[in-house]
Length: 175
Image 1 (cartoon, rainbow, N blue to C red):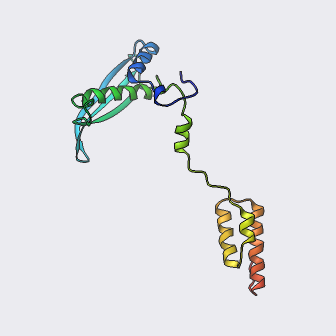
Image 2: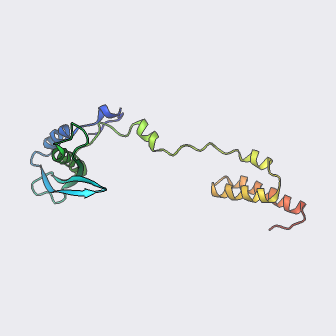
Image 3: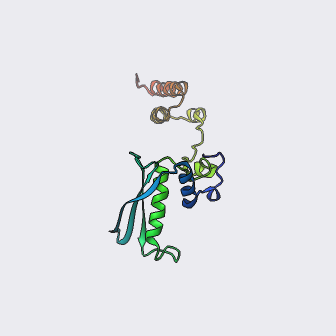
C-alpha cells in the first residue's frame, strides 16, 4: 500500500521487491512474456520486451508492460544483459499496470510536484497599470489583456471607463 511522504529515489521500490509483493498479493499469479523482438529505430538497435502480469490463472485483463533497451547496452552494467534488463523492466511495468504493486513507497514528492508546476506568474498590479494609461489604444490593449487573463470584472470595467474617457477627450465616440 502506498504511504505518504515520498522522499526520492531511496523510496523507489525496485522490481525484485515488486515481484515479492505481487506474489504475496496474488499467489496464483504469474508474469509471462507476450512478445520479444529486436528492432532498429532512430539509427540504433533495440530489444523490445512485452510482459503480462496475470493476477490469477484466468485473469481476463492482465497488466501489460513494455520496455526496450538499446543493443549494445550503453554501460558496462547493461552491455550483454540488454534482454534481461528489458524483461525485468517490462515485468515491473506490467505489475503496475495490473494495479497490483506501486513503484514508490509514497505519493509524489514536493520536488516532483514542483518540477511539474508551471512557474508561478506574479500577480498583476492592475490598478498601477490603469493609473499609467496615457491614451485610448493603450487602454484597449490593457482591457483585452484583462479579459484574457480573467481579471476581476471591476478592473475590466475601470479600464473600459478610462478608455471611454480618453475617446471622449480626443473627440471620438466609443460604444
